[in-house]
Amino acid sequence: MKKLFISSDKFDKNCILNYGLNELILQENAALSVANLVRVNLKIGSKILVVCGGGNNASDAIAAARMLEGDYECELFFTTSNLNENCKTQLKIAKQIGVKMCENLSLDRVDCVIDGIFGSGLNKNLDEKIVQMLNLINNTSSLKIAIDFPSGLEKNGRILGACFNADFTVTMGARKLGLYSDAAKDFVGEIVCSNLGICESKFSSSSSDFLLEFDDLRLPSREILNTNKGDFGHAFVACGELSGAAKICAKAALKMGSGRVSVVNLNGQNINLDEEIMQKNSFKGADAVAVGMGLGEAKFDINEISTRPCVVDADMFYKKEILSFTVKDDAILTPHPKEFASLLNIAGFGNFSIEDVQRSRFELSREFSKTFSCVLVLKGANAIIAKNGVLYVSNLGTPSLAVAGSGDALCGILLGFLAQGFSPLDSAISGVLAHQKTAQNYKANDYSFTPNDIIEGLKWL
Image (cartoon, rainbow, N blue to C red):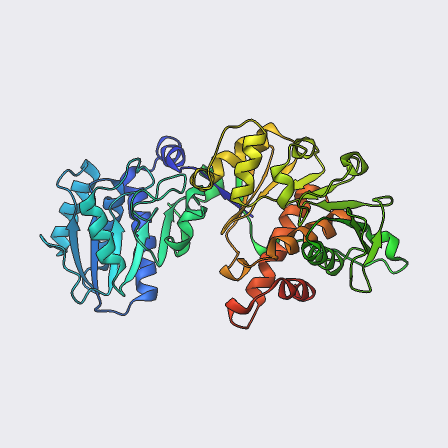
């Protein structure tokens, strides 16, 4: 996993104060990363339009244009005449090299647009003129490269009116949390982290947040030969009004390696289950339990599972009994945004809409996990796992996973890990990654992806 930071401002200051670098040196290194990216992706002689604001992002962009001028046809367009001193310095040098300026925005024959308008410091909605300009740029087929943050995206990952739609985002010095929000996913493109001239370990302090990678996936192991099914846990699934959700969950838990899987129908009726899955009348003997998926109005005694590791989902987030699970340090809660809004309301955080949750996914996940001892998995385009105020973000999910039953399969995967003795946090990390990996491995059309494909894909991880 890689470190994530809200901002790299303090690292820039550390480079300057403790290592003798100055802002111009940092800008040179940032610009070199942008220029190198252009050279890899664009043939010599192509036309590059560099759109600049008046701050340090513009300084980086101008320096990149100066490095590329000669091999490429570079033009600068400014959205403001109010330039800071670094920007003025870089502009003076660029002009001497031969970089041209244009008074009017023209996208004619432009092969690449470099965005140096705003960085992560943006804190208000873009004005209409900038919105219109970004819309024009976004509608072209030009290669688009954003410096640090696509213009219109603020540091917490919210879109402020419009956003530059980058093919690449070159983030400076350290990976920023805001680049991995749900809202940012369609705008950041491929994220490239620039080296500012000093190894990250020299200037980055400890991070409270992390970006997950597939290398962080830890699969169950069966290396010991003298074993039996009892050594790999007994996973139980609570079944309510909609048995289909429980069936998906149970099949996923079995495929994830649980030695035995049983379903308890809270309504007391027989269920048509696959032959390898058992039906039980109680939770006796459970090593881990999943509850909530398809629960509806079915009733159950929460005390039956209070001492067991749990995965909690779906309908439980609309019941006051959910509070019993929030204080369990061996519970994993897996809400989607609407369910999380309900959970926050029941937990006394206030009344939140789905839009409120999506605007503040990082902040709300962090505060919730500081308050309660459970592990939170907030589902979305980029899943967030939160524990004790630390966020683990995965941007590896695909649109294939946006299908009914996908969350039930995720719960089964998490349940399978829990039943085999993985810690709740490790179960959440590996479970989310396994879920996403099945989608990435899928070779057919993404619209045909189903929960059964998730379950079958687990054996190929």
